[in-house]
Each structure stands twice: as structure tokens, then as C-alpha cells.
Image (cartoon, rainbow, N blue to C red; front, side, top):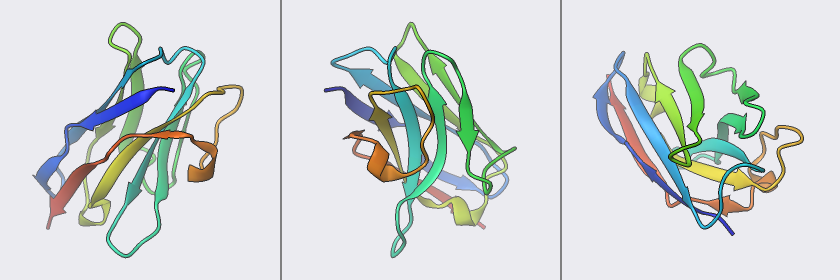
Amino acid sequence: QVQLVESGGGLVQAGGSLRLSCAASGRTFSSYAIGWFRQAPGKEREFVATISWSGGSTYYAGSVKGRFTISGDNAKNTVYLQMNSLKPEDTAVYYCAARRDNSRLYASPINFSSWGQGTQVTVSS
């Protein structure tokens, strides 16, 4: 089982940027797909972006496409979420998750088996 730890959250003004990190331990990411999800108070957890670790394929939610970029660093066993042009509606707890199968990309939380503890992102208007 892979263990995930997110970092990089914080408070930023609208229009600003943050970079979230998801560091893995226990196993390498080589055969995994990694996803970022977010959950705002009173709302369901929603998909943000995902990456196939070995092939580098990516997929984004429409609400973040063009503003967010998911990427990975093999040497550091870390996946990043670069978030630009942040909006108040991006405010949420952000979670990374892992799926031990990167043959295709999934956008539903039920398809991911390992989760980090989350990191808070707050965007002020």
C-alpha cells in the first residue's frame, strides 16, 4: 500500500498561484495513476486532475483545465498540482489519491484506493 502526504496549501488572493505536492512512500508510483480531488464544505468530493505515472497521460476537470497542471517527478516520487489564476470557488481541501492501475484514467473517487490527509487551499476575493 502506498502512503501519500500532501503539502503546499495555504491562503492566496484571487488570481494568484499555489503548487501542491503529493509525496509517496511505501511503493514507487511507476504502475500507478495519481489523482487530485477537492472537497469544499457541504459539497461532495470532486475530481480535479489525474496523471498516468508511467505514460504521463493527463486528464482535467473542465473547471480547472487551462489553469491547473498536474505533473510528476520520478526521482522524488512526487506528483505536483500547479494552480494558476485561482478563483474563490477553488477554495477546498485538496486530496491526492492513488490507483494501482494506470492502463486508463479515472475521474471518480471510488476508483482510487489510497488517499492522503488533505491540504487546505483558501482563495480570497
